[in-house]
Image 1 (tube, helix red, strand yellow):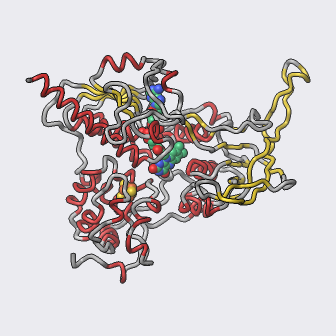
Image 2 (image 1 turned 180 degrees about the horizontal axis):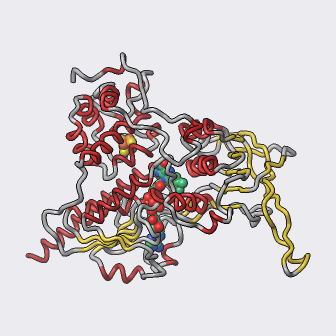
Length: 489
Ligand SMILES: Cc1cc2nc3c(=O)[nH]c(=O)nc-3n(C[C@H](O)[C@H](O)[C@H](O)COP(=O)(O)OP(=O)(O)OC[C@H]3O[C@@H](n4cnc5c(N)ncnc54)[C@H](O)[C@@H]3O)c2cc1C
Ligand code: SF4
């Protein structure tokens, strides 16, 4: 303990951040890694609180003070063992958790004005070191079990459950409609926040540990939900939320008005070396274009920063509230501004302006052609709504034209209608379309069917999906064990 409590003498220091000009030119992560001494020094700033608020505000209740102390003492292998005991992918959470809203936002020394302990960066450092040292090994269950679990969706929720179940010797098959596993960690989140080899390394290890990945396999199209249910003792639904919220404004159908996830997926696939026709044709590529992104969440931040890296001539972000009231992380806004993104606060799109294209049917068949810009209305913040948030109000007559050749709509996501898509009316959903599941066990209304992650919570975070996946796996293990006991009696 004597090595700790250094926060009065030692200031908060993040790992080195690459200069904006340099990082604009590639999709590499923007933060470097601590040197060993720096990680120890920063960890030693922890005050080792008796009641650690960082831990209670981490969705995984990571034992943060203990692994900080061990890192400060140079006992990295033990730090890694403790960190990985509660988190399936600590190096991923260390990179992309919004720490300012979770662990670090509740650090006591932050609240005393000394600057939070850099918990996320230390967590990343510990696990990156563990990979380099060969401490992260494929799963080797003590004994194989005959029971099997089918998991639909290879995002963090599904993969965390797969890892947990496989450790107990359960036979696990993960089905995913994409050609690579990882869900939004692979095809949503850009490489400058989470480099793809970090995710792929985990997936390789899960496969080496005996998890079967059935990729390019869409449930409801390539295989039915009932077939999966019949093939396994339990099923976990971990399909995420993919239906984009849309804008139905005049000119919405113009060429060059695209959905955020289509745009980000094309960029991420291109990063893997895939040839994507829509990227090659320019339909989903910002190079040489004036780009306008609509939205103020983290997806919008990822889009604007992707457009900068693709070589857009200008990138503007329209958001209907102000900076203080945007849902996206302030850290990401700052990164975006440093990289050259312009924010147009208190603005909303009214229509998309485009050239008309005449179809074969002549004048009567004229449809919207390439987009030329967004007609924008200015807003002001009015009275608070029921949640206490100030409502944006239109300023009449304030319209202006924001010129653009590519407009990206980043307005959030909703669940697909699984009961209809899978012909499973008994799969109960909420009025928002998310799957209804028990808060602790994640059991749905259907026997032996569980649901985790965004499909239950709505668009959320990787760390919550990991927690759900681990908890559902625990509940399934308990149920399978009790069934085995009853059968043996
Ligand atoms: C652009 C973007 C940036 C984000 N940035 C962050 C961030 O910085 N930090 C953070 O914590 N969170 C971030 N998030 C949120 C985070 O990615 C999600 O909360 C998390 O991935 C949810 O995990 P999941 O396992 O529930 O679903 P997903 O990751 O969405 O995975 C679901 C998987 O199910 C598959 N699937 C869906 N339907 C079927 C079907 N019928 N058959 C077979 N497979 C199917 C999909 O192909 C997908 O692979 C971001 C999200 C987006 C969109
Ligand atoms: S998992 Fe996320 S919230 Fe928990 S300690 Fe790590 S960075 Fe913080």
